[in-house]
Image (tube, rainbow, N blue to C red):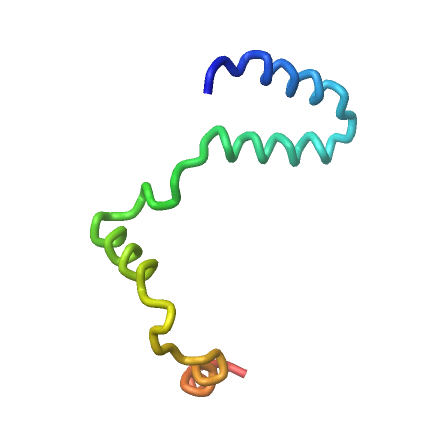
Length: 80
């Protein structure tokens, strides 16, 4: 990636021009997320990761129930 110093300086200069506090809070949340973000799979066990891989690699033409079929089959478990 190289040296990010000038890019960071540009971002700080831009931030200095923002006066809207709600925008600043949104930016803070975004920056905090990316500063601490981990891959969602980092917390999975090996077995969970393998299961996820299997699901991701299932053939697209695999037989599945439509939403309507699913709702009909599970209607007895729903409240209301």
